[in-house]
Length: 321
Image: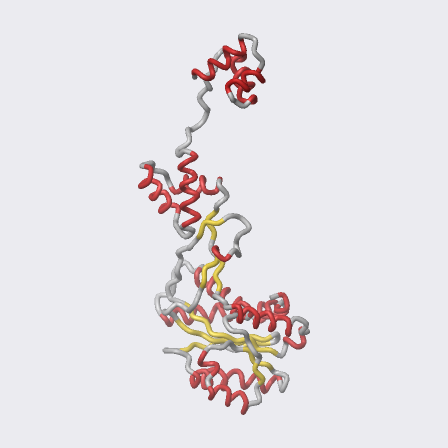
């Protein structure tokens, strides 16, 4: 208050705003604003601001932002609790969201990927370059196949991270996935441009090479090879059961051509989109399946509903991957 009064006093004594700015080392825009307010109101004090007062200070704002950037997976509630411990100020989760949004941080679900080595990235690039000019007719000979696991109880927790706009694919904002969850029903299927297999359920245990040959290759793949002819190409990934010696022997005996496949590359396989669609349909149910039998029935219905037209759209866009 004393500094403001001194500024007004010097101006009233005839000094210019430039002189006062130089003498007191105060920005001239501050002096100009103060003088205008004094002439308008006769007072140098600022009127109370209208509306609700700020819940937290700029310093506490910075604390929230730093905490969110260092602990990107923290919930708004956890960040608010940490602020309370540090400052004694209690704020709601809604306030945390508002203050972080104002600072450019938003709660978003992270991109999930499988970690890749430099060598694996090179193999993926070479595979893409090799197949980038394949025609739709060439892709029509390929059966894309894979297993997937579905759980009885859908995990409805939305795991989010705090990140800035436009940073979705920054390494720090990507969640790495290594394995399937341990519970649930394992299924297998194959899709082609003009057809698809039935949805196959593995009853128990892991998919060994023998089970893969007896439950998948014999009843499904061999029949499609016979229908398509010698141009048929079978795609499967590099899971241990798929690369067993007895599997290789079977494919060679049946003259089934296998597509080379880069390791850790489910995102290149169009059938992953089918599994995602089935998973979303299961998650959208008002009640989760109460038994394995009900889960199987629900999956079968979803598989039947997600027909060949959907597969065709996926497979004709494979060159865009």
